[in-house]
Image 1 (cartoon, helix red, strand yellow):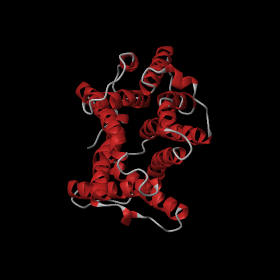
Image 2 (image 1 turned 30 degrees about the vertical axis):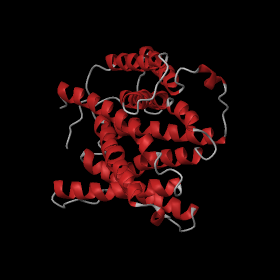
Image 3 (image 1 turned 90 degrees about the vertical axis):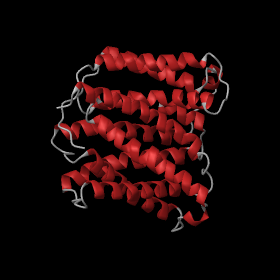
Image 4 (image 1 turned 135 degrees about the horizontal axis):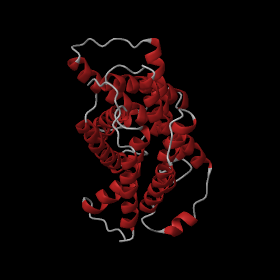
Amino acid sequence: MFSFDSNKKAHLLMVTWSILIASSFPAASLIVGKIDTTSITALRFIISSCLFFIFISISFKFKIKLPKIKDFICYSTLSACLVFYFWSLFKALETTTPLHTGILFTSVPLFTALISNQIFKVKISKHIKTALLLGAVGAIWAVLKGDIELLSAFAFNSGDQTFIFGCITFAFYGPFVNFAKKKGMLTASSAVITFWIMLIGSIALIAIVLIEQKGELQWGILNYQDYLTLLYLSIFTTIITFWQIQYCTQILDATIVMSYSYLIPSMVLLIDIFIYGNAAPPSVFLGIMFTFIALILINNEFKIPRSFSHSK
């Protein structure tokens, strides 16, 4: 059984998750444009899979079993959610802007609640719906840095259409984990599940790159500094964040887990202000305040910890 301490630990992990994801934006900007972005993502997944394979091999004394068919289907479903999300993001950025994707990403918690309710029949109270809308407003305000005129200039384009489907698949991840656990699937440890998700994702991404780039991966173009950046992204914003999502979704409701994505724009701003020393208008803190209030309201609604049995 999960104790209250485990519940608190999950919330802390999700806060650190939002910080790590926020840190990935300046890191990723160092290598964007050097080679095909899907190829970079594939390499990132491969590095993550190799490093995590070493970790779980040592942890499980090199006794990693091939997944059963039903588990493989679950892993493939979860991996497809993440692969399509990353692919849609990079594909969308060919015709849209980071500002647009930042605004659209705030829809993930709303889609998570909708999928949980309509597909997996999880009841969503009016309080949660209100809190989700408040969080979306706060996150959008943070993305816009308090400049409402930027929102009025928003025009939905083909890249935005692609990315919104990516947000939907990403939102499907959490509710599906909850559903699979209730049905007695995904019984392996969070570490093993994370490894198979990354490995299957790596294979899928390589296939996509080979088709799109006609066999050219272009990895030789990158220098050692690019690989150091990829190493950071692979360890901290892929391995650790994937594991955090997988672990916390077994403890908390999927809506709570995905609601922490509201913190990402705020964390990006705070990193920009306190680490890089860039100024931000005081009004931006209103959006940050809204996101924190929304998280408090959502967490107060889900007071009872999940009670799945847990392995490391």
